Length: 429
Image 1: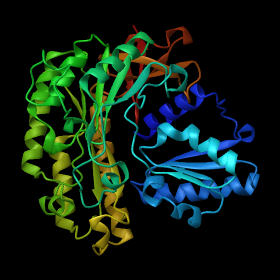
Image 2: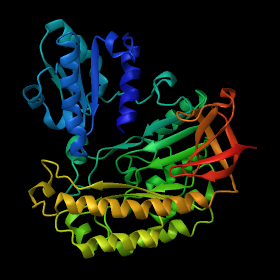
Image 3: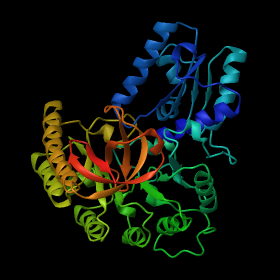
Image 4: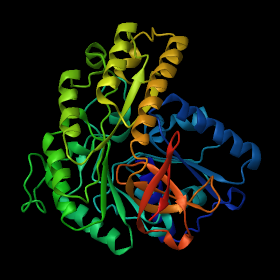
């Protein structure tokens, strides 16, 4: 979501006459987009602002946007010298106005207001992280209130875009040469628009599965979605994936813990038993759907037995990839009131033990592709290998292979010849 926000802010600023530069030295204004999901991200913000002020004194105006901006508000001006304006998560459409006011009055400015009704969700090709891949928000905010999570306080309540607007954006992206879209949201499968306009001709057990079918029916080449919430993951989503080949064979389904006791403490709203049922539905698909997840280790009261339950769940699910985090309390969340009774040493030990399991499973999943042929969207010239291109498969794996830059933006068939830690290597057919 943060990448998507940055792309839209850059699009808005350029449309309003600002010239964007990647050279920090040339910039009159520096805007830092922030995340508050993890404690480390907040620390990086203050370190970065300190560096800016040390290097440039008061030469540049510095703005903060994103979740930290929304949560901390005016207190940011007191916490860190050198911040000139603060823009909340729903006020990003007014960023140009904020900059103008800061320069006009030479005083701090803050906007934490709600999103305007006419907010433009589109981005321009030159301001996307990749010209062939686009993020399309379909829902923002969160109603789940997991005890550890700050997102509902930073992003507000769930609000779904209309299906008609989504389809309009899909068609626009297609006309601009985008080959792959990601339908995104904090809980993307919690999608519930105010009306069914645009979905009338599509069957489905949930509004989200109907939307998937509607987007797939546009003929867009590749469609992915993230992040899914287990409680709202209906088996009909898998049926939709089976029906439409352009709905890609990858599901990101964060479980957070393998222990029912910890899940209750997290207020996740699902049990391991019903999570496994969703995994079974995914694994039973004939499409070989790749599966990834998020895990938190060291949540308050987590015992060795609770952690072993997480290890057992990994053995059952055989995830293709996993994002593992050590628990850190976020001020303002219910979990922050709990005693953080798992030591840092234990958190670190569990993190590395689970990471070892994850690496083994990932390498096992990657190795299964060696000798096979995968469809790859050529996204960029490889950062590490000279003369090589890089792109993603439909199942969200990175593949590197030799080729010319004229292939950028094409979808090609690649025979996989080698599997390494995080990447597949192959030869174009």
